[in-house]
Image (cartoon, rainbow, N blue to C red; front, side, top):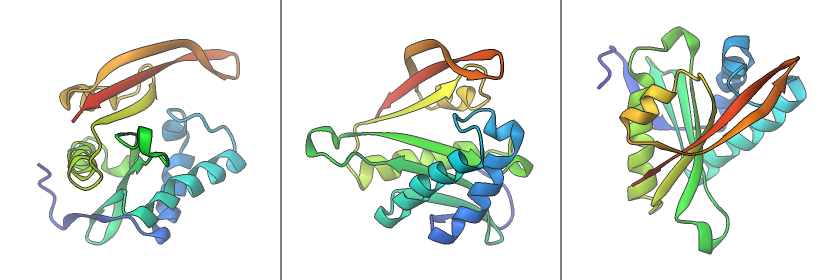
Amino acid sequence: MVDIPGYDIRYTQLTDIAPLREWVSVPEILHWFPMANEKEIEDAIQCWIGFCRYASSLTTTIDGVPCGIGTLFLMPYKKVAHHCLFKMVVDPKHQRKGIGSSLLKNLQHLAKSFFKIELMHIEIFAGNPIEHILKKFHFQEFARQERYVKDKERYYTRILMECYL
């Protein structure tokens, strides 16, 4: 799927927090996440990277250097353990090269094969470029919330999408 020399996918490690922090701090990337300042970013990435302890997070690399992270946010209760939220981000320098599609394909495989997840879902903001990848992988919108995020004086719509595995 990705034809980049040195490209690989591995389980996320705690040390991958540094590139994750760097990527989501880029204004063009941060725009697509609900965090607004350094404290919120730090709280969010600590939670995000913490799931690597359960082997539910994957990192894409090029020549060993991280270029994307996708994480399954596993549910802690048996009754709802059949579904999960996920998040992913690709280094802005490596976007539009198939890395996001590769990462999502591998996350779906991990979810279904290892964690027995039946339903993956994600929340995005309207206009997010990841939406076309999600649709390619059979994600469908199941809810829309207008005026969900207020950034300065502008509101953004939240879209919830899901995919049955």
